[in-house]
Image 1 (cartoon, rainbow over the protein chains, first blue to last red):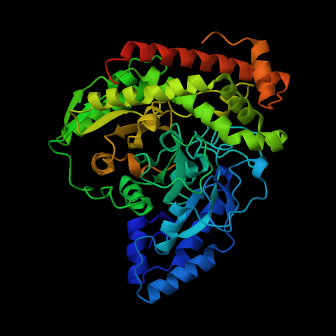
Image 2 (cartoon, chains in turn cyan, brown):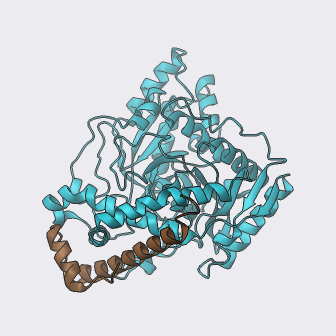
Image 3 (cartoon, rainbow over the protein chains, first blue to last red):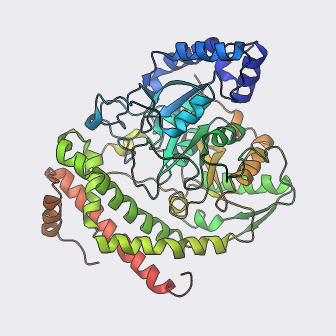
Length: 451
Length: 54
């Protein structure tokens, strides 16, 4: 057998059930891999009881219990989400020493299946802004070139999955924090529909925009994870249509959202055009559609995000202002410019903006567009005093609550690029069907960074 | 939706208990001005689309 750390979730589950592999061996291999690639800075904490958890899973498997596909499989969690007994600092000195006393529901659902929680992953401080170099933990680094950023705020999650440390990480996404690091690092990121996955036990950034979701090595693994993470039974299984092919599906290619923007790199535009051609060759009907102007979505979401974030932090700022990182405090301060009337107005815009999006995509099964407009920037671009915003096309779907899937679609000077698939609320199954077909037809998902 | 003055922003930050050093304040003011522009954009959007998508 090859290194167990390289097995997909499905391969690992099969090997664990057949007795060809034990969870102890699998978790041990993953811990070795994490140590060997520590320069990525993906993990901020390794669970001291990881091998004990593995032994419990092995005992369950030996008793022929079958709690689910994650029994004995290592999973890592962004340090914004509570895992019982593990640090819960949201990447900030403000919460230094805090340890979660219970699992967030999303963690509990995976733990009930026997998942092994091997540790916590780096995050931008309070999921707000980064990279910031003067925090307790150094920033995670892009596995394809460690002089470049990962994007964030699920920075450690993307570095860990793309860097081959784990197959599955749990992240959060308020404005693109699952999808943009997934795109920059070269892995899959799935932001589910709003409210599909519980946000309880997760430090809030902006509660009406916050989403919890998986980052995984492949679309099928992300879909499998989302199905376990989903709260309630009213949602269609994300994995239900994996492998069905896409012949006859109608894909709307929203080229206007990136190709008309001067910030979009030529390589990004080329990769997206090639992706559209690939989907067409697979039998989908691909046609250009114009999504509504992105700017009002970004504007309304920014106003809501900053106002809600400042409100969430009011009591912590009063008690621990000096412990915040400078960039985070600066970004929180932006929110002071927003009055209650401004916030109410931005919230009034959500419904018409959502209606306009629904109308624009009504005639297609899935929308194809960019996740980010460029590859990951170097750390050197962030050396100044100001926050640097990287151009992306993600926050609109935090506002509308639609599911969105980012997956690798090419490279620019050795750094990954991502495409984004978007659908109506509850259509994660369709996104994963199309994403998986694209993955199978190309070699993007099997590219690995050099170590 | 007027442009936020430095004096006004200082007053708001003080009221919210935010004490920023000069460097952080300057960057925060710039971000706040940007947000004021975003608020104006949302207002324009609502005005233009009040009948269309509501």
